Image (cartoon, rainbow, N blue to C red; front, side, top):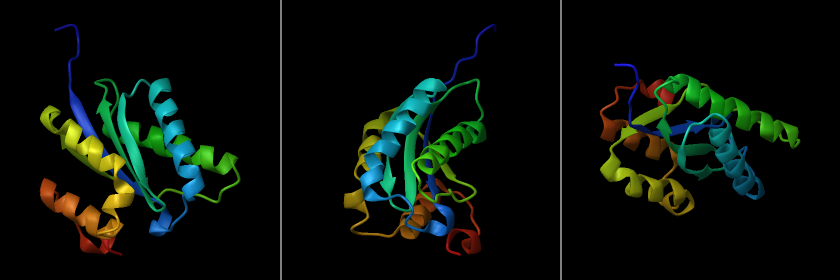
Length: 147
């Protein structure tokens, strides 16, 4: 076979350093617009981006030519630089959560990513992240998730 074919949708979640509220509300729209430009530049189709002051959610189609870790590194490194260039003291936490999304669930996950402020009226980031890990059957060490 001379071509590579894939259709891997990923819901990625990662937090700011120590889950501190480092993303000012007035920067959120600019940050996620910039993340969309990163996706276009690196040819990583982005379906949705959103989050809160202490974490981000991305829903994207992982190209066959890029590893998951590389794709997330592209988003984190470039968005961090963007915030630094605007005078913010900023750092992403090491690591991430990444969950596969079936084609039939794309609309549901897109709505979830875009409704983060509403969602977080009911639960913290830590509660949300644990729920995502459990729902996906991902084994985890509580000292790294809750610590």
